[in-house]
Structures are given as C-alpha cells and as structure tokens.
Image (tube, rainbow, N blue to C red; front, side, top):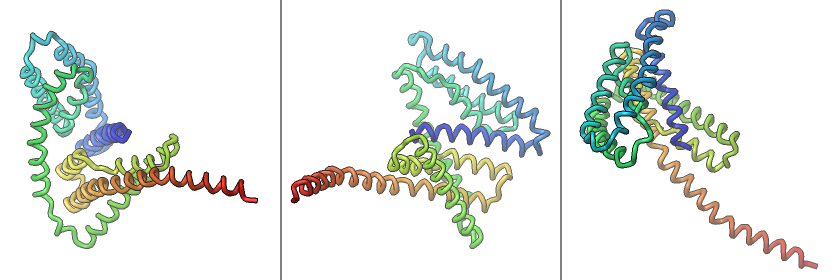
Length: 262
C-alpha cells in the first residue's frame, strides 16, 4: 500500500511540476495556455501512438528481435522523448519520465528482466554521479541562523503534514492504528524525484540557493529518519502482539478465580 500511495503522490507531483515550470517559463497563466496544450498533445501522442507501437514491437516474435535491439530502441526513445519535452520548454527529465510511463506493463518475465537489468545497472552507475554533483553545489555553511530556522520549519511541516494526512486517511479507510502509523511513517520517505525537482527549480530560478539547500536537507533528514522509526514501530508492534496471549491468559485466570470465589 505504501508503494502504491507513493506512486500516486509522485505522479501528482510531476504533473504539478510540469504546470509550474510551464507557468514560470512563459511568465504567467495567460501565456502558458498554448504550451500546456502542446504538452497535453504530446502526452496524448505518447499514450495513443507510442505506447501501442512499443507494445507491438516488444511482443513480436522473440526470434525476430534480439534483446540488444530492444534496449537500443528504448534508449533511443528515452532520448527522443527528452528532446521533445526540452523543445516544449519543459525539462528533459520529464520526457524520460513520460517515456517510462508509456512502457507496456504486460511483458513476459524473461523479456522484462533482459530489459530492466541493463537499464537498472546504468541507473545505478549514473545516480551516484548525479548526487555527487548535487552535493558539490550545496554549501551548508551558507545557511546561517535564518537558514537553520527555515530548515527546521520545512522539516516540521513536511513530516507533520504528510504524517497527519496519511494517518487520518488510513484510519478513515479502516486500517488499524498500528498499520496507519507505519504507513504514515513510510510515506515520509523522500526519493530521487524530490532531489530532481529541487534541482530543476533552482536551475529555473524559481527557488534560491539557500532555499534549495534547506529543502534538500529536509528531504535527506526526513528520509534518514524513516528506517529507525519503522524498526522501532515494528519492534513495538511485535512486542505488543507477543504480550497479548499472556495478557489474555491472565485475564482468563482472573475471571475463573473470581467465579469460584465465595
């Protein structure tokens, strides 16, 4: 459930980023209608034309195509989609993300593995480089007292807002308190998408370097706190379940003793 909720949140966040960057690039809501329509047309082309073509290409006779050919086609599609979004005034990262969304989900397991493994290895090689470049552009010493206050405020609002909303929604849907608490904690994980969005916002001049540093540290601190909290919650829940049989036996013994007391 946490994975599904996180995926929905990421999709909404990326749609918001597209609208924000288009508005900022065009200088106002009135001027951004045409670019937004172009982006909508691009999304329709990806969903109605590119996705069926990919489906036919990847499901054709296995002997007619080598996995290397599939990888080259997918890599070329990612680059073309990135170039298309860059020409539309949206960052190329969003084009790569959109192409990933158009990939068929009903691939045979062996084909899926042959495609995902090299792409995963490439990502594992490039992601550390991206984080290293991001880290080189951050100077924590420039925060100062005001920046430290901003960091504390960002962290408190980010944690409390997502935790309270998730916990309340989970309880309203009937989840037990322990599961709702665990789900609300897990959803406070900030992934690579948040770092990319912050980097795009800084490069576009939407946020300053100081705000970028504070929000980046917020994402890292919030993510770093999730694992120990989840372990503590899981341990506490397991301990509570372990004590339940003993507590039930004690109550049963007390009830029997009370019934036989003159």
